[in-house]
Length: 226
Image 1: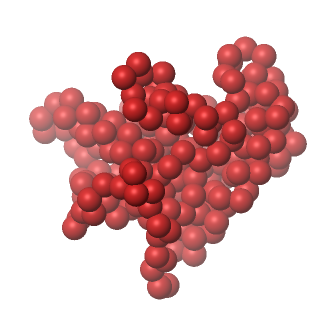
Image 2: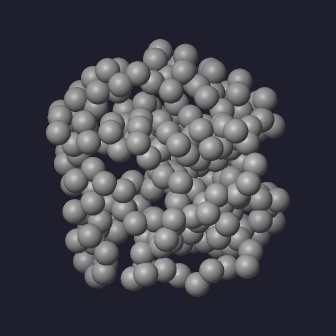
């Protein structure tokens, strides 16, 4: 399949192109975790961290942390994008992920086996996917939680009662659904054509969903470490 050309970058945020990715896929395993808002990505990621030794990185959490960091030059911009249900410019998100991966790898004990990363809620659009793959690390596959919109909406409304998150309200939820379908599903379709999507039905309870996740992880060569 011919390579897709990435869309033009934001000139204010562009970083120099790298001849090779920062991390080799021989030494670092990256799995993207995607699904609509409320599909259960965070719950299942926690299970995989516990049982498979992954480091969980949430693109959304990293962006929220950055927006609240007092000396961040991108804080106000990130806050506006999140409030509007829009996707933050890819250069910011990719750099935050690379920084977090670098910090984790540096903190590991010498001689530890290859690092495993679950990147939750990323890539959310095609330019993010292409940029990360070429400059940070090629992924193993997308773990995609497939869930009907009405189920996700009910979960989010319930979560909003206790989460304190500004985007767990009816208006933001609708915007996030639209954004996911319009921008993230083309990413899933692109990787699926390469045989790099593991699709899991996410309608049942968390325990039943995780049994299916474990089966699919085994098929892809990942075994539990604990």
